[in-house]
Image (cartoon, rainbow, N blue to C red; front, side):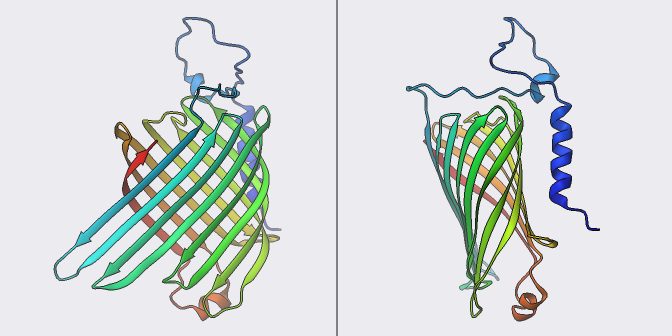
Length: 275
């Protein structure tokens, strides 16, 4: 009998959550309370922002690198993100793209786009929906989209750390050049960890997605994305990231598209503006 990784992730995170002491904003810490290691693992239920508190934010970034000599190359990245967050409801739209040429020949042109909607239902539990798409001209991927909705369980939430786990059924559409479109239902399990999640001057964020086909855990996609943001001054900052995409694909697709690789890794650094 095959072991379901989705179930393993869920059991591990529930065990961790139950072993952590619970805290609530309804029981404020006494005045003068010293910092404790347990504060890093506490859960603080969000309070809706007031009328005059900042709810909307926008970020745009780009990076450019050109090398000349025996080999001439040019690489650039671009990203943008728009976010609404009042602590109870969150809406985010984001875009990340890469373009490159070597000796005048285009060897990279791809992008990722994502939309997320999250809303707290009760303490530690959120409803969420999402859609994410990607395009890769070099591999002949015209469009891939995963869309779904489900529930998110928040284990740790405070000014130091944010950790949660979410799961949902998703519908996947995929179309490669010169091939018929394919669509199927999959599961999506996402785990997230953020250091300094609510600071606007520095933050470290990690996201992981496991997306298997219904009933076929050996046919899956695994996405890992981590980035560090550091504010330089005013609206200006630096964003450095790493993204790894793994896709088992089917033997038929790998045979039909010899250039297709199961693993795609990207490292980037951008200068960004945040408002």
